[in-house]
Length: 309
Image (spheres, rainbow, N blue to C red):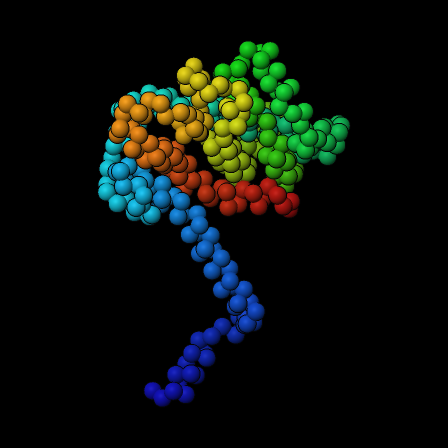
């Protein structure tokens, strides 16, 4: 087969309806790929460094870049069965409880508030929506919230973190926009069949809203699990406060607390950075395990909840 026949063969294989990309489009595509690769390296390098430190002998930390220099599991032994086991796993349990409660009640309240606001005939709809938006843009500050928690005797209590984290107006707007796209014919048919407002909401609207619910729940979980700002405000950095610390706050506390006790324990002093890296590594596992199950909702949920139609 000569060269002309080969060219004719591939010419026939081409799609005649395919739009040919210009040189500028090709250059932009190459630039996007390069930027994505650079961004992936910038994200993965710190994770690999922490992974290496977590499994490395603390006496050889200076030589660690990406891979462990001398493998050691002492840091994980300290966390699972050593002196730091009780405090770490207690804070881990606190984070699980806080994240579970905030995720359930936050998204439930937001969805229930957004559903009537999605109806154009709802009385005072614009005024109520403006009230929510104002609370999202402006805040009274830290002191009124602190004094409120002090009055309710919730300082040094994980319920202060839960109460301050439940409200999220951004997710309420996502829910509202999504509910506006639900066909009214479905709701009218359910009402003709005798469904009440609560039955309509929980049996019709909620099952149809799984994409936006999954997306908002995922972002609530990530934000609550990794957040420690509220705990930093309401829970003191002390031995009495350790029992109520969420995991992110406990890691912050462990990194920043004085190392007086390390002077009497040479192994602990040498492996402190390795213990911190191991704690951070373990704290990412729940989010990484959950992500594959909700990624399908994240792909479509935000798009459906932000674009009407």
